[in-house]
Length: 637
Image: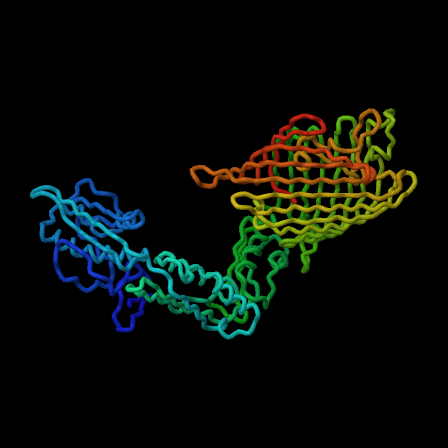
């Protein structure tokens, strides 16, 4: 029975075991190998590394010298051959051109131990090793290393022990953490043993320990006991968690322009919370993505007081004002140009103001949105003003919107509560037989609540998960006779992973309930079609068919989509591209019983670009019997 020991450990006989590197394996009780130079096997050296490289020698991984004293040929299975060709110590001496026969013979004998140790790192502890020297007199010799690895060593058993707070804590979270470490152990019984797998499993267990509650956790001891006669490895390790850590006071550096409460409110880290690496990473991401800071770094010193460990926050503030110019294009709206001005702290009130102007053929707009810093519950005050022009070919709508309310942005859930004024003036309806109510000409005041939950594994490139959102609003019209109305919208997006591919499902529905004569502004009604809804149709082409072939908004809307997404591989490796096949359907009407779906089918590609998913789709609209190209960038839910 042999042992694979960590630094400073010995087996039962008290003999220290050599290693290729810290925690590297060493096998004992293995059968003798065959070598042409007969000599008793010397005791293993303290380390495989021969020490300082002799003058004229090259390192183990050096390139082959131009002039060599001898050649080396390795005959073994691929994994063993690649390891020996890279790390065999004989390689270092090929550049020593004045080696005599006695010195080369000695190196050949010593190489057997080196080969045995290297092969042991792959889990082969009973190898057959043959090292021979060929070559005529006065010719450059060739040393042939032949290895038959023998049976692989399998894991016989694994014992994971704990010390410190995690070993005795009755807290459910600590119990779960212990269970998870054991459940996720990467080298279970029956699996082949290798040094890399052993090291990786220990590293993973330690990462799980220090990820939550115990930042000062450490690997107290580890032992891989090798039974070379049975080709079994018996593993044991002890993880010492140390004490439980709780967050203490926050110490912020780098804030000069903004309110001192901004950083604590954005991080949402509370004094007394249990230490959690993910919570710190999420808080750091919130700071960096808030727009107030160009960079942010959060850490807790594991040498600090466990009962109240100070949270160190270092930030670099963004410029107080910035202007962004942009150009772009879409298949729905054609080319566009935009300018955006941001003031991070408006004098007098300290709010952030973002003002945008976008020029494009179909829907140019100007908008300004002002938001306060978050309160202790992450709620902000928000005020918005927007003017826009929407050109639907037959109808042109000039709209205005004013909004004032509260918004809360969480890690997964967003909430909005606001009062909103909408006004729409529609040109093109007069003289066409279309009433103002049918065209969406009117104004209204409404109160609204919006809730959105996102539960995807990764954004903006989700591979599984779902998003869910709904809107509920109610108010009354202001044009002519005042009429009450209720408006509701629901949205769902699900991504399901399959073997080598995935399915994306999308559904959306909306309804406005009011008297038939109520003049509800078009911004509160529904039209669909285009890049982000029903492909195969133009932007907002799906609506109510009015007099003279004019398409107007409706009070009921339903959209559904199924998309198959398959990653594209090249030479067996995943690329940043995907192929898709999809079917979309959508309908808009003034009465639920009048819903008639417009269907689009097609195929496309996706590219994981640095700014988000680039979608290029070619879709056929069944109802219009036409093919359309759709290009869109970004993931929105």
